[in-house]
Amino acid sequence: WILLEYTINASPKVLFPRLSTPGGLAEWFADDVYVKGKVFNFIWDGVENLAEVVQKKENKYIRFHWVEETDPNIYFEFRITMDELTNDVALVITDFAEENEKADAIELWNTQVAELKHVLGL
Image 1 (spheres, rainbow, N blue to C red):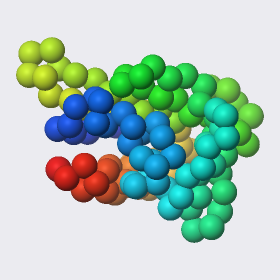
Image 2 (cartoon, helix red, strand yellow; image 1 turned 45 degrees about the vertical axis):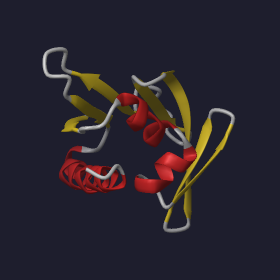
Image 3 (cartoon, rainbow, N blue to C red; image 1 turned 120 degrees about the vertical axis):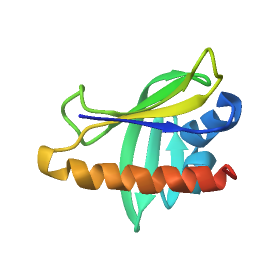
């Protein structure tokens, strides 16, 4: 699995909708996003990918599980943490990738999070 942490100088109340709503996710994560119930439809290059929200706590974290993935222990998660001393906000991303795909996955997340920061005006 992959665990990545990015410092994001935005309040959790501003950041969380970008991680948990179709409109917010379409700004930086996917080309387009639709939601029906707990299932999000992420579209990249015209290809649909379905993921179900399996856990969520407002302004804290959201965890998605790919519908086509048979292993329930494989997911991707966005978690917002705040340093109690400095009040620095960080986005912690958990994802799963095959060993030979980890470098590409990390590079992709770096690109996506750079886009998120751009959308947030950071």
